[in-house]
Length: 329
Image 1: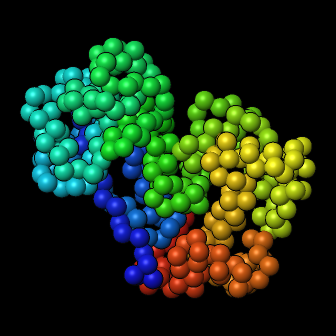
Image 2: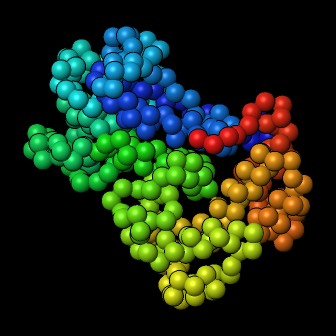
Image 3: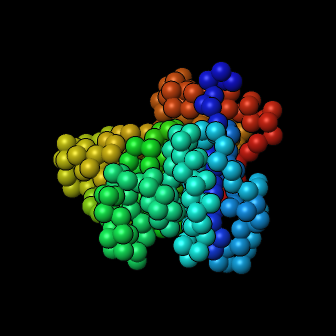
C-alpha cells in the first residue's frame, strides 16, 4: 500500500486581515474531510499572515498562523485569501512578495477578494478570472487586461479565482475530483450535506461535487432512486423508466449535469457506502459486498481496489495500525 499511496499535496494559504472565517474554512475543511474519509493524508496546509501575527477575522475569532509570509522558492500552490478592505492591506511590500512567490509556485489562487490582490499584482493579466458578485463590475472595469467572467470559480491554467465562500467550497470539491476522482469528491460533498447554490431545494436532492448544476429534476430524481437502491442496484433501463426517460436520454442528462454517466455516479455511491462499512464496522467483506449490491466478495474486492488502490483488508489493517477512524463531520 505504501508504494501506491498518492503523494500528499501541500497548500500554502496567505490570509489577509479581515478575512471571513467561513472563507478560510471553505478552503481547509474539504481537505480535512478528504483526509478523513480516505484514511490518508492526501492534503496538508500551512497558514501565513502578512506580518506573522494571528489573523483577526471579521468574526473576531483569530486564526493562528505558521508565521509571516515570505516569497521563498517553494513550489506549493499559494492561495491568497481576502474578504473586506483588501486595499488597506495591499501594500507595495506585500504585492512585491506575492509577485516574487508567483515565479516558483505551481499555481496561484485568488480567493474572493484575493482575486483583486492577484490582479493588482498583474498576475491575472490575459487570464480569465472572477470575483465576488458585488464587486464584479468594478473589477471588470479596473482590469480590462483580464477576461472577467461571471462564474462561481474559474480555473485557467495556473490561475484560480473564486467569487465567495460557497463558490470556494465548489472549487475545492472540483480540485479534489480532478486529483483523486469523482468518488472521493462525491463523498466529501456528502459529508457536508452540501447542495450547490443557485438551484432550488426541490430541484436538488443530492450534494454537488463542485461542478454539478442539478437544474434538471430528472437527474435529482434518478439520484434519489439510486440512494434508495444501494443494496439491490437497479439496471439503468429500469432507473430511466422510473424517471420517465429513455436509457440513452438518462445518459445524456447525467453527462450534461455532472460530467459523468449515471453508472459512474451509481458505482461511486455504492463504493463509498462500502468503504464506510469497511472502516466503521467489523462486518465480513462478503456482507459488505451484499449490502452494497455486489454479486460476490471477489467482484466487490476487485472494484474496491480499482477505486481506492487498496483492498478492503488493507484498508482495515492500515487504519488499525494508524489508529485512524471516521466519524461524521
